[in-house]
Image 1 (cartoon, rainbow, N blue to C red):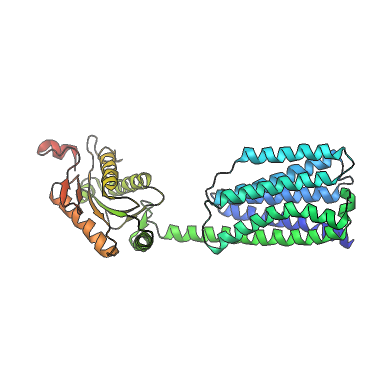
Image 2: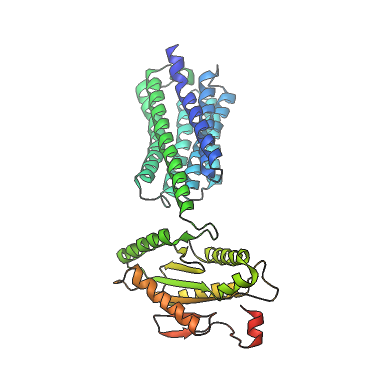
Length: 401
C-alpha cells in the first residue's frame, strides 16, 4: 500500500502544479508561457499515471502513450520557459528527437534487452532539455531567479542521461515491471518529486514576479499614451546613462513637443487633444526599439532616450517621426488639417548627468519652436535642421495648426 502511495506522489504533485499554473494563467491571460507550463505538468502527470496504473507497462500501447506524454511534458517545459524569455523554440527539431526516441523504444521492445528502451527514452528527453537550456541561456537574464531556472533545466537534462546508467549499474537488466519494484526506483520517485516541486516553486515565483512587475509597470505608465510618466521615465533614463557609461555606448536624446497644442484644445476640445497625444504616443512606441525608452514628460511634451545611437541616425529617427506625424489624421480634427511637432536633439557626453542632458535637448527644442516649428534642431552641432516644407500665410494656417 505504501509503495502505491509513493508511486502516485509524482503524478499527483504534477496535477496540483498543473492546476496552480492554470489558475495563474486565468488571472493573466496574456502570459501565454504560464499556460504552456501548465500543459507540461498535466502531460507529465498523465505519463506517470500510465506507467504506474497500466497492468503491462512493457506493452507497445503503454510505451507509446507514456513516451508521447513525457515528450509533450518535456517540450512544453522548454517551450514555456523559452516563451517567457522571448526565445523561439525549434518545435520541429524537438518533435523529431521525440519521434526518433519513440521509434528506438518500439524497436527495443521486440528485443530481449529492455535497457535499450530505457536508454532511448531518457536520451531523447535529456537531449531536448539540453538543447532547450542552451537556447534559453541566450535570452535569460542575470538575476538569481533566471539562473535558478537555467540550472534546474540543465540538471534535468543531465539526470536523464545519467539515471538509466545508474539504474542498470545498481539493479542490472530488468523489465519495466521489475524496475517499478526496485528500491532504486523508490529513491528516484522521491528525487523526481523533489525536483518537480523545486522547479514548480521557482516557476510559480517567476510568474508571480512577472505579474507584480506588470502591475507596477502599469502604474508607471501614462494611461493615454502607454508611455512612462515623468518620474519612472527619469529613473529608467538615469539607469541607462549609468549602463552606457560602464559599457562606453553612445546615447542620444530627443525631446518633442506638439506644435500649437493649446489651439487644438481651444478649437476642437480636450477630447480631440487627447486623441492627438495618444496618436503621437503610439507613433513613438512603434518607432523605437526595445532597447530605447520613451516617456511623456509634460502635457504635450515627450522624450526619447536612444541607446547606442550617435547623432546622425538619431536625426533620421526624429525625421521619420516628424514626417509620419505631419501626415497623421487625428480623429475629430477638420479634414485637410494636420498637426505638426518640433524636435530637439542632444548627444550625451559621458561627464554629464540626466538633468544637463535633458536641458540641452530641451533648449534645442525651444530653438526649433522659435525658428518656425515643425522642424528638428540639433543642439550639439549648433545648427538648424529644417525638415519638410514650411509654408507661410493663409495656406499654412489652413493646412496646419
